[in-house]
Image (tube, rainbow, N blue to C red; front, side, top):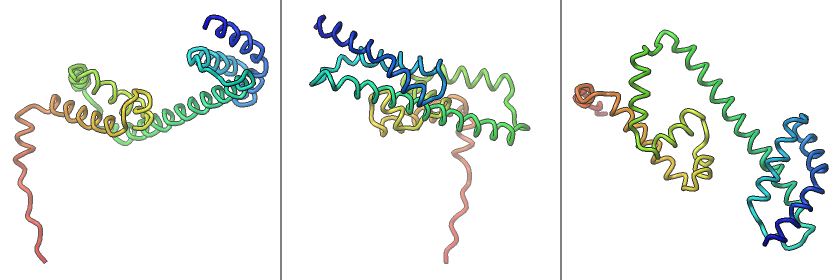
Amino acid sequence: MLRSFFGSRKRIEKLIPDLKAYAVALCGDRDLADDLVQEAITRALEANKALKAADDLRPWLFRVLRNYYFDEQRKRSVRREYFTQEKRWVSENSEQSLDPEDIIAIKDAYETLSADHREVLALVDILGMRYQEVADLLDISSGTVMSRVSRGRQALLSKLVGPSQKQKRDNVVKFPLEKS
């Protein structure tokens, strides 16, 4: 085991210049390229993947670097899109700004949620990640993510809306449907 680790490490060290060149070609930034190479090597060493042949290491490392780069690009794009939508929503609803008391109430209610609900709400509602991304990250099914998001939102709403307001909401008179 120890011999294979140091053997892989030496082979990886030989590939660093090629990995850096490829990373620069992908992103166009030397500093970011260094970060990409470092992350790819870290992932490779952590994976401890038994490759069938020594020649398989090079393409595998390049694939790890490429996948990591595109994953990060996709995450940035999703976050950018989320913040753009958030800014648009805030500007549209600027006259409906929250009072400091409301902000504190929301934070307090959020803190009382279970860890599972806080986690998925943070990833989906705050960071804007997709359900499948969260499912992959947490190693659970996307259905479980959807369920936790729904239950977390319901729990948060019930903590924010007192029993008297909930009762008012339940007592709303609904108009009957018109018969044709």
